[in-house]
Image (cartoon, rainbow, N blue to C red):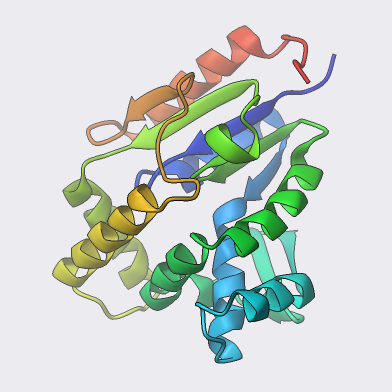
Length: 228
């Protein structure tokens, strides 16, 4: 018997990061934020002034990008070339650039290998936008978390302002809708629920209720034997 892979997908502001971290902590599983991988790569592309449409330079950047994740007292930290970029990768500019480069096959192919290697042994909660459909299509448990755009924009706006990023609610809503369009309409690995995913609308749910529901689902399947 092996610990399962739990996939949690959804758009920005749906609450998937909060529930993924909480679920991993409660289950004592490894938490993997695949979106952060694309974000840190986007930051590297920006810092090196690389044309995001140049596939060859993107491939080289993917292969040479020196990033790692560390669990700290206040949560997971992201490092790029030894520097803490945990907050830097969350600004709106990097979010949109991450969405753009994540549509590139060369980028997804390179990071897909790393993501599968990190999670293939199980006992992980993997967060992203294509985990249940592409990265781990045979994940033991799949969730897709969603909420209406206005609710998600309010959550995102609050998060950014708490981090000292000066944006307006309207700007946040526009940026969120733009990313939704990019992520949902890209040809490669679009944002959508897997056919066997459990879809949860968190628009009117407290985050604790979402976590409790997920834990009930997991508890019923936790002893299932891995299928691959």
